[in-house]
Amino acid sequence: TKHQVAREREVYVNRGRSDGRITVLVPEVKGTVPTGVTLLHVRLADHLSAGAARTVLSSYRGRYPALRNAVMETEPVFRDDILSDVAVLDLLTAPIQTLADRWRSDG
Image (spheres, rainbow, N blue to C red):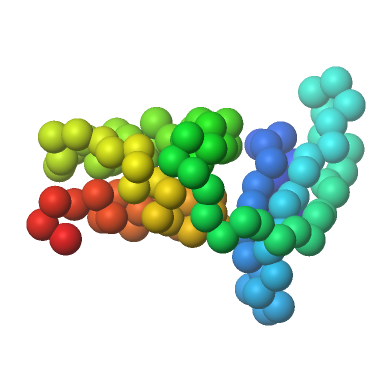
């Protein structure tokens, strides 16, 4: 994961496999060359308001448009209000299709 973060030069949030702690990996870059990775152990809020969740997802790895597109493949509307019901860690780390299932009208 650290190598991926350095190569992609994008922030990455995950849960540690062995200890379960939430980490944020931040690439260090000089110019366009990756020079290292900073690992931060963090605590996240359990939930966010729908507006705050949308802002976070719009700024993190293109997850908001990816989620919206996945939902709109099967649903007539994308309801932002459902974002506030989803745990922040899930919004940032769960597979998009898994998140999209929460919007299914038959679920």
